[in-house]
Image 1 (cartoon, rainbow, N blue to C red):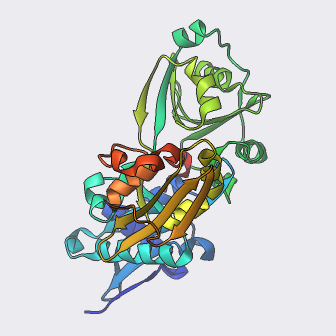
Image 2 (cartoon, rainbow, N blue to C red):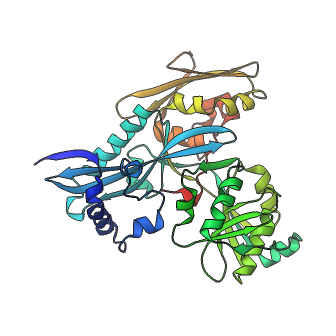
Length: 372
C-alpha cells in the first residue's frame, strides 16, 4: 500500500472535483460555483489543495487557503481550512488527522500564526480548533427602520463588471476585512446579488423577500439606509446581517435601526504560534496598553507534543512580547482555552490571566463571502 501527501495536479482537476462531490453529496461543479475564488485549476490555486493519495487515487483532502486579514491596520495571514473530505469507504483510517497535522506544519513553516475553519466543533476540537470570536447577528424590520427614522437609499442591482472596481475600492476602507486578491471571483459566486448606490454598496443573497445582507459598506456612513434600500427592492419586510463586535462605529449606526440582535462566534480558530499572533497585533495591543495597568505573565499553550510559550508585559503603558518563558508568573492553558481567551469566548481562566484581559480579545473578522 503506497500513501503520499501532495497537492492536486492540473491534469486531474475534473477527477478531484468529482471526488469532492462524492464525499459531500453536492451537485456537479458545486465548488467552483459557490467558492469561485478558491476552486480554480490554476497553479496559484492548486497549491492550496492537499490530498492524500493511496494506491494511485485521491482518498482524502484538506484545503489550506491563505486569508490576509486586516484588523484596524494590522495585517495577518490566517490559514483557512476548507473542503475537508474523505471517501466514504476510507473514513476512520486516520487520513484526515494526517492531512490536518500536515496543514498545521505548513502554516508553522510559513509563519501563519492562526488558522480558521467552519464546521462541526466535535470534529475539529480534538485537533486544537475551537469556536471563538465575537460578532452580532442583527435583524431589521420595516418597523425598526421607521422607529429610527431611517429612509431607503436609492440602490440598483449592478453587473459584475461594473461593480467590481466599486466594491474593491470601498471595501478597502472597512476596518475589519479580508484583503481580496480576486474581488471579481468573490462576487461571481452563485447566489450573490450586488447593489450599488451613491452612498456605497451592498452584497446580499436571496431572491424576492427578506434579504440576507452579506456585506454593506458606506463611505457616507449610510449603512442602515443601504440595507433598507435593498430590503425594499426585494419587496421584503425584514433583513439580517452580521457585524463584528469591535466594528463599533458601524455597529452603532446599524443598531439604532435593529429590531433584535444575538451574539454569535466568528468561527473556529487554532493558534499555530502564540508569539507570532501577538507580534502581528503588536501595534493594536500597544494602543490598548496605554490605558492598561502593569502586568507580566508567561502564557503556555499546551499542544499535543509541546508547550508554546510567550511572555507578555505592560509597564508604564508600554507593551512587550517575547518568545519563551521570561516571567516567574507562568500560566499554562489548554490550547482550546487559549483560543477562547485570546480571541473571545467563554473561559474559566480569565481570573488567572489577570491584567492580560485588559488588552484582549484580539479582533478578527472573516465575512461570510470570504469563508473557505
